[in-house]
Amino acid sequence: MGMESMTEKPKLTYEQAKKTMTHYEWSLKNEKILWFAKSLSVPWKHIYAGEQENPDFEEIKSHPGEWLAKNWLHPRVIKPFAHIQQRRFLYPWEHPELFERWKSASNFCWFAGNRGGKSVAGENFASMLAIGKHPLQDKGLKKKPPLHGWIISPNLPSESEVPRGEDAPILKKFYEWLPDMETGAPWGIRKFYRKDKIMSIMDMEKNESVFNFKSLDQDINKFKSEDIDVALLDEDPKSRPIFNEVTMRLIDYGTYSRLRFCF
Image 1 (spheres, rainbow, N blue to C red):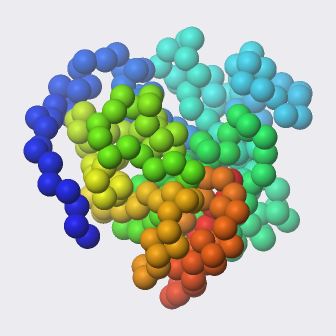
Image 2: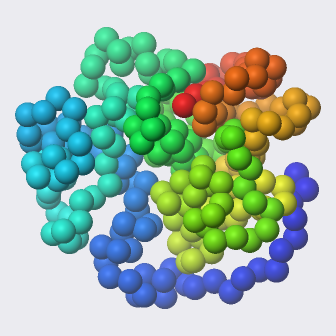
Image 3: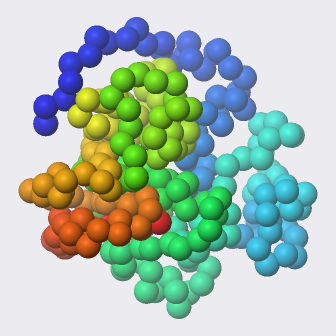
């Protein structure tokens, strides 16, 4: 797979990293994706106790349900959770008719305006699959790690080390939600190889999934000759050849359907 060689940076031990921050700060940083995944299986009324049909964050914070308010680590911090539209896209179990169609689907598309939570939902869907924490994996309906996938977005991550705030938005989302093993976490993002645009993600059982980052303006030949389990398209590809090549890479095989997410 031709990964670049890089000098290993000294790593903090798990305990050293944990001691450098308070308990709730550590949990927010290193268990964020776990809280998000857990929230998908919690009844919505235990997350939001108000009466609005589509509440915003401030409304939910003002009327937290039992699960959202219980056993958290700091009274002024809300634990991570999927909002109502993200739940309908990521795991709509509270809508039985939709859920029956949804749980066997292989293509998922979400159309919404800016700041609607699409990129977070897409990145978290891929991340949950990579660490084996999506509820469908627990039910045996989707393949567990290790997985191989493509992350396709308008911009490729930089080849040089840059401040994270200046890098490609989709890469920033992965680092925002997954623990970074280079800072001492025992699972999460093991390494991002900038030259090859490859991210290695380790789950808690030490299974390693690999995501290749690609951009929508790359030559069509960059999308050939690989079989993949997951493809995330962050924005409409607008290129029929790219869409067709992704489709070919995701032809079903064996027990599990491969997955494509479009945002």
